[in-house]
Amino acid sequence: GHETRLVEQRRSQAAGNVMLAMKSSGLTSRLHGALSWLDGRELVACQHFNAAVRQAGMLRLFRIASRAGDGVLWYSLIAALALFFGPEGRVEALRCAFAGLIGLLLYRGLKRVLVRERPFITHHSIVCAARPLDRFSFPSGHTLHAVTFTILISSAVPGAIVLLAPVALLIALSRVVL
Image (tube, rainbow, N blue to C red; front, top):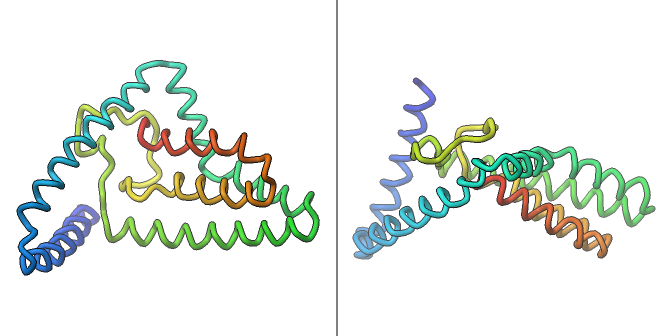
């Protein structure tokens, strides 16, 4: 409908601007070839990771990871910083909140410009194993916030990295697997 036409219009506009700039530098055909090669490699990687959804245990693990990345985990940890780590914890909690807001604005803005559809929309061999929050896949807000909060919380509570790094990795992988 109307949303699809707007998406195609934005994508065409952005591609036109990029192509015009590249034509003047003679990079068009080399870049097109490189991007086509990358698209092919990405499809193979997506199919490989997506195969995990066919195993019930893996599907459950990545759905839990995806759900953890929806925000409740991070909000709880940020609140714990503010409540249990004194004045320094409150400063760190504010830093996390600010970083989260900047991340939100950044990834939403980029999604409007890049308009990269989710692989299951473009490639029917990719199984959609969880309801997507929106139509576009890149950049991933889940991954951006998981990495950001892992770094910030672990800088305030160094031992937390042992638990948070694997969680952040699972959240990031869930975006590709599901």
